[in-house]
Every structure is written in structure tokens, then in C-alpha cells.
Image (cartoon, rainbow, N blue to C red):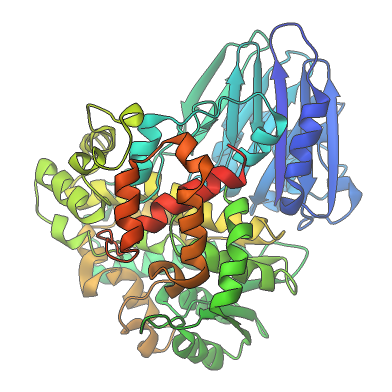
Length: 593
């Protein structure tokens, strides 16, 4: 796991290696173990390394293969790299390292851009061809690893984080009104390729972009799951589906043990992370390091779920670590969490993951985590009401239950400069849910959430916060074979038992029932759900200061309304509307936008 960046020019100028070096410096937290800078005329690559596979200098990046005329920078982990290496050796390739980066290089030489279809893992990479001048950018199927782009006439820059591109300079930092609408409507989700900043875009998941030496480029998408029933599964019973998904999940967990250092687990005490622990125990993992975090209660809201994580730790005999955080400590850590966000994220989990990652990284460098199960296996409360609805009715129901506000409400929030006459957020959802490849409304919603919301909320949260402390987080529920199988699974099996029915049935074979039959929990961070004290002071100062007034994103009267009653307006998902506005302004100020 690492951070990568680079620059490509198309106007005859040399790549600006000074700008690339500034991006490398911004990526230091993602890769504390080493750095590299490589250039050849109009192309320059930079890299920061977190050593997980092949800890020797042979695995350093940028990785140059002079015999093949290829250079690569890579962020992520390829779990089947050893099998691919053996296959490529059978084709005559010889390796100088034991790294997964070199497998991508050789694989690209052998398969071309189709190398992505051979990779099981999470990845973003850039490859330069010496002879053609071509550069290829790619991102994994589920968007687990990020890749941001800044294009100007005659130049393209790319990096693992948006702030790294800002560090390079010369970025249009004006606010994109459509992206702002998404942010305020869709729980801070801004679908690719947009970001809040007009001058920065992101490569969508499951996408390969080929950039020719003259600046022309093409993009293609690969590996798109189909949310449809297959004839070969027509005779499958519920038990057949449970067995198949259990087998796929076992493979996914086993794959994510590949490392030259120990692998632990972030254990929330919920079904998903508990299943990972149980499966690892059945794989023979003993003394497994597990980590849970909890916060002080605020306004009567509980701040931890230790009662459940303790059950799993005791049952499987893990080396368990409880991490407690006081409200003052949480307030003090907000600045770091906001600085680590590649884009502003309002989910309360962000701060929890930042603090958890800080503590965990002091004792281990790689963990497995349970993100993705709710989106893949229908764990959220907005899926059951969609069952049986036609597509138009389902789109309206989805928006009612998930959107933070409707388009009409936007007119009283954003200033005239950013107001839009149409509703781009609802239009996006309608287009996505109406597209072919999803049999039912529930299938369409699961596809939407897996391809869009999951990428730019839970997955981005885990990447940003773990990598801010040089911690690699792996997500077995987003193994693409498992996701494809789950997509084909009849939605009624996923909706059963209050949601995630298939996973709960599997869980009853593996983990204690009290963890399965508990009320659904979330990562509780009461001090952000209920704003008071130091956190409220931070938000008030940010929204009342000169920078916010000069920026003029929001109508002053609406901001004053929220500040007068900081906890009076919540979203349908129980998010604090004042926190949404304050977090955005705090993020913009933190990154000098």
C-alpha cells in the first residue's frame, strides 16, 4: 500500500519534477518506508512506499524494467500475485523482485490493458511505455484505491489524493455547483468523475485510461457485475446460495492474508467484522490481533459497542485491544482527520477510523475490515421498502429515505451563485437505477450503492484514514468474485431476517448468536452526532469566519438558523445538518482552498 503521483505533458515541455516532488512530499503518510522519483522527458512519476510485500529495496518504486521498456507506480495489493507470477514465468518472464508491482509490469507486457482482468486485489497504477510514450492509468473494480486527476491544456497530473494535486499547484479550485449539490443531497457522496473542485476529477472505478503521447486518450470500463438471475442458478435453494457465498467469503478472507508481515482485524463487534475473525480462526490463525474503539457517551447516546466485540474476542481467543477515546481527545483529533480527507466526508465514522488507525498502526501494519457488507448484502433499512416497487416508485422511495434533503430545500441553503435550476442528484440516481443489468428495484439500488455510494463514503473513508497512518486496510467483502456472486443472488435472500439474511445464516454456523441477533449498530461517535463543546466551537468559528463569508457558499440566514439550534436539524440518516456545512468549510480551509 502506497501513494503514487505523476505528470505527463503534451506541449513539448519537460515534466515538472519539482511539482511531482511536492506531490510526493504530500503523500508521505501513505508510504512511510521509502520514496522514489523518476522522469524521462515529458513524463515523471513519484511514489511513497509502505512495505508489505517484498520488504527489500527490490520492491521499491517507481519500478523500471529496462528490458521491457516499462515503468510503473502502484498503490494497493494484488492478492493472487504469486499465482500470476508462476503463470508469467511459464511464458518465459524472469523476475528481479518478489513484489506484486513487478507482476503488474510483466502482466501488462504480456496481456496489455487486459492485465486488470487477471488481478485479484485493490489497486491504482500508472504504467509508462518507453517506446510509444503511452501512459496507462487503471483503478480496481470496486474503487478501493483512489486516483485523482488534474488536467490543464498540455498537461495531466495524477495522484492518490486530491490534496497532493493541490500541493503541486496550478489547480482550478473553484467549487463545482453540481458536485456541491451532490454533497449536500447525497450524504457527501460526489460520484466520479467529479469532485467538489472544478479542476480535479477522479478516475472512476473499474476503469482503464490510455493516454497517448499526443495527449489523446480513451477510457474503457471492465468487470461490471450484473444484478440479474442466471439460468444455471435456477435450481439453487437458499442453502445452496449460503454455501456458495460462504465458500467465496472464505476465499476472500484467505486471499487477504497475503503479506510478509502480520495481518490483524478491525473488530467493531458487528456481524461483518465478527465473521472475518471467525473465518480467520477457522483458517488456523491463532493469537489474531483485533482492535475496537469506543467514545464517551454524549446526551445519553452510547459511544461504544465493546460488549459485542468482547464476545467475539473471548470466543475466538484473539489478542484483543480496546481503545477508549475521550471527547476532548476526539475534538483535538478533528484537525488531523479533516486534513487526511481526500474529499470532505461527513460520516461520523471518519474520525473514529482516524483515531483507530493511529492506535492500530503503532503495533501492526495490515488489517482486514468489514466495510462493504451492507451495500453488497442489503443490510441498510432503505432496501426493504423498495421490494416489489416499479422502478420509478423505487427511485422516489430511495431518494426519500437516503437523500439528506430534496432539491427544493437547496434554494434556502446555497447562495444564488451555486443554485441550479435542475436536480442533478435525482437525475443521476434515476439514470443509474434505470440502466439495464438489474432485474428488480432492490437490485438496482444495491448496484447504485455498491458502485457509487460505497466507493465515495465507506471505502474512501477507510482508505483515507488508514493510509494517513501508514496502515493498510483490506476489505474481503469487496472481493470482486464475492461481489459478482452476491449480485446474482436473489434479493429476497439478502433481505431476509431483517437484512443481510444470507450472511446471518452463514454467521450462525461460525460466530456466537448474540452478535447476529443484536440491533444493527453503527460506529458511534456521539460528539459529532450531537454537537456541543469544542466540536461545536470549531464548526461555529469555521462558518462565521472571514474565509466562509468571502467564499459565500451558503446563505447566511440558513447558517445562523442552524447555529442557533445546532442539533435541531438531522438528515433521514440521523446526520447533523450543521456538521455537513461546517465540515465542508473546515476541509476547504484546511487545504487552503
